[in-house]
Image (tube, rainbow, N blue to C red):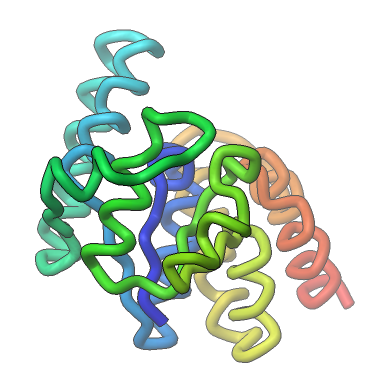
Length: 184
């Protein structure tokens, strides 16, 4: 599968990391555009200067680890599209130009299924995708989640559980499923 990943999914570190690691483990492909990366940086700036510096560093790492994932599209394509929020047309344009199968986003209302159907696209939320990967290969997803938990606890000097970390990352169904699989 080829996935176009929206800004709202790239910005949260834990969500982005588990999703991209899962996508990579299944040999699927993840894509975004320069405009999506710019939105990520601009959103992080709202958190403060340190937030933007962190986002810019994470974007550089993303570029290095996913060198063929930037999709370019024409302004004409973007301008020809309609979505309820016209500021999201660039996401749809990137998905079309990149011949993606789906857009991974948390933003359901601005990507109506009826419009996406017209372009042969579906909209999925990251929690759903990660759960599908979990069904296909639970040990890999559990390992990814446990590695993230160890890193987060070390980095922030915390003692989160896997369920707490994934819920905080806005992945509630994944949090529940992974914690059940780990705890039995």
